[in-house]
Image 1 (cartoon, rainbow, N blue to C red):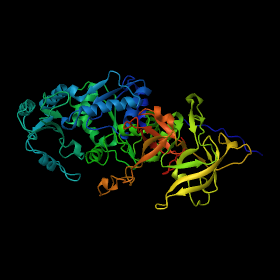
Image 2: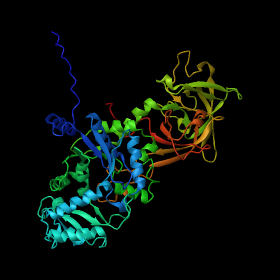
Image 3: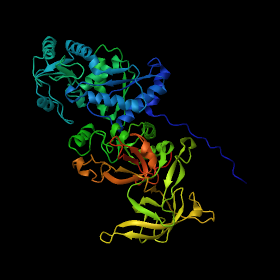
Image 4: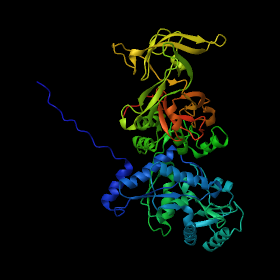
Length: 565
């Protein structure tokens, strides 16, 4: 008896824990159906791929639930902040495809309100001015196994604390002389709650407020109040802030905050063979290990953009890795897979030869020139086509010829027949070699005129198909080939300096490339597939006489096999 048919039911996509929380909040009416998130970068560096995950999550959640997402700069440490970073962050968020509409905010917008809330904590006995040095404060804080020790200044009266705090604001004291601390619990098992610093003295120019302030609030104090003032409902942050959540709640519980957002933590992005720490990225740039913040080897958004990554590929990547509570290491191969899938749909196919050697077709007339129509994309006729010149002398890849071919060699070799892409079958008849260096200087062949278009009417087949460019019409170009920035999957782990694992071969500059003439009209930012070689983006360093192309990603993954989603 035949087995009965079993209906296969596809399960619905699983909801991550953040969306599940919001679903429940909406069901119970906790926020009156509102969903309001924010992306709150500190303007002290350039954004990287890890930030892309947070951007996609915060703006994506708001869009999915019909809510709002703010862009807010937490600019509370002016000694490390620059307008350059502010501008780059705005550009990166827009490039990823998101808009904050009229909701652009700065923590510095709230400096006066933050100060008033601090005075409220002082007058209610929840904060005090401390004269201990930074070193003494650390020593008094205790350890994970030992409780902290109270500061001798902890029991100042509210009146005395208020007077000192106002004098701090007035600029009477030098940097480091005093701080304002929350009065919580020096014996708390959570070290974050052992009287954390709320304000410090900094006689530093601020890029927005100038010289108006001589005291600046700490991030942990500022962030939660900024959320509350903006009406944020769900404050999404990475797991490193999980221990800070009790302080987030304590501050809002002890001031007349207009609302109390919920902080929810998720696992940050950890990506193999790179680093996603601002401090480490600054080191790489400052010490000259890379050419700048937009070096295509860096995981910065301006770096991957210059390399040729698309916002669609990054959004797809963030969607695939998902949101979880557990830290995990994401394989770089997945990111590259997402880029390949996107560029495969949108990139025009052209021909370029990186390491050229001349191919002479002996039986092709010397002065003949024919133009072969090449489609820009085999599956998208709408992209059109272009005429590619074909002549007696061509350039092919030096690696496509082998003087003594091994088994299963399907490219050029003495006596071997191959197909020239969209052109003819050719058979190698010989080669020229430099007697001193042994380098091949020219390859000789004959073509079969009956195979025009690259196909044989007699049914014979060849295994190898080579790309080529006409020697008389090709344009010189520089090509930059990029590899992993580090040789170790987790370079920041272990006792050794992470820079020990920098890959000396992460950049190879090929100055000898020859490209087809249609690329004369290419513009910086244009992305192409160089047939058989990978996807390449025209770089801003290009000149009319010598264009420069960065390889975005190879055609095939050489590090891991990624199954299609």
